[in-house]
Length: 85
Image (cartoon, rainbow, N blue to C red; front, side):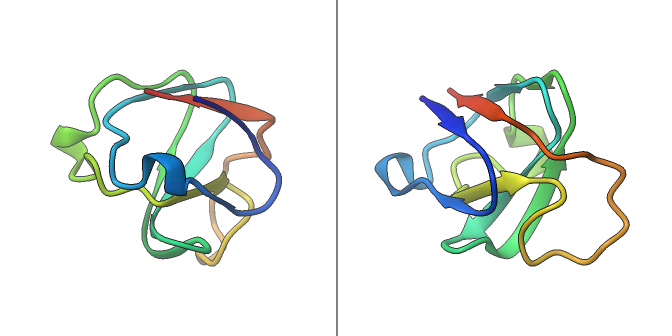
């Protein structure tokens, strides 16, 4: 599944099913809808396996690293899209 980014995107079609991803830009994965709950920043080129990072099959929404409800301090810039696997 390919998603354009810009703000928060709920991914209810594949809720709690993302186990890996590819990205050309830094993206933030979120545990709950509307970019809430725990989050994890994923820099390019992405992650083959989210299991060892404690985020396997729990992603419900995504944003670029400069969006969402997380605190500031990320060095990641805005992204154009990601591919969820």
